[in-house]
Image (cartoon, rainbow, N blue to C red):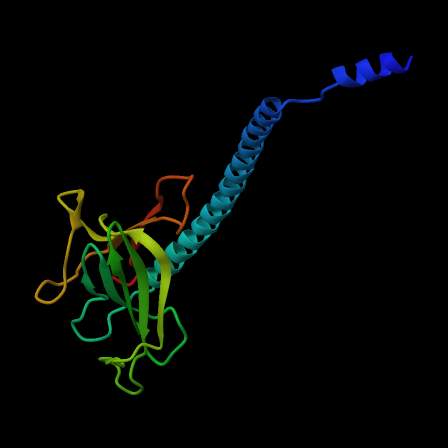
Length: 213
């Protein structure tokens, strides 16, 4: 009896070192795959949240810009409601806000690096008592970055004028060229900072008719 027990114990040798190594290697592969899948799902959820937030921001910026443009007015005399316009900048006067006179509003791309710029707005108050030909403060009462990453290459602003029954684009005006057009087109193309799994820009295109032109 004792001899049989000794022989059974001798035959029960357990796992070899090679078997344990293979098991550990396979376990590490499975664990790595689980971690990778979890990280991918988590990153995708974060990206989706950031993109949804970006869409809300772009829509809000476009809505505010359109509201200000619809209230664009001449600052007096022969001046036009739009002061200047280019592919990346727009300056105009608006009476949207309750103040003594119109505000001078400037939207432009700033701090460009590679394919992205930030979208900035500056608002200037009219100098009290300077109307009806209003002058404006040299220091903005509001200066902020609205979007951190907008496309640096697209045409952000353009004018539209009717000519021969067709709408013709106005690429630039200001200085010696009057900005005498009734429509401003805005093409906002923005990306959420840090988004890696959702490619492409989110864009909104609006054409705003100037009511006071």
